[in-house]
Image (cartoon, rainbow, N blue to C red; front, side):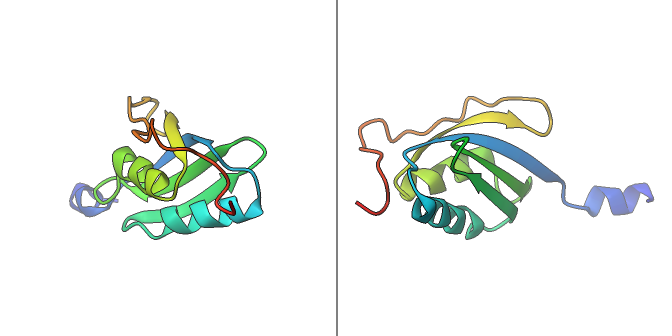
Length: 105
């Protein structure tokens, strides 16, 4: 690929997040919809057993803070575990005072 095309190609980034507050399949669906609805999100995989979410997103449209914000808004807490560029940002949920519990309750 020539350099001019490469410069115009959006970079897909994978962020793995640790999630607190999920307890059932409905929580997984709720969180998947919340993340998948963000502009720039390419693919979402939420793992209930590991309490993790893996999100592929375009770096120029969605960043870790937006992902965390969507998780907070859905009623869960999250922190970044790892990113595809090897850096772990300090992005963490700010919903410290909010109760995190199953979306069904």
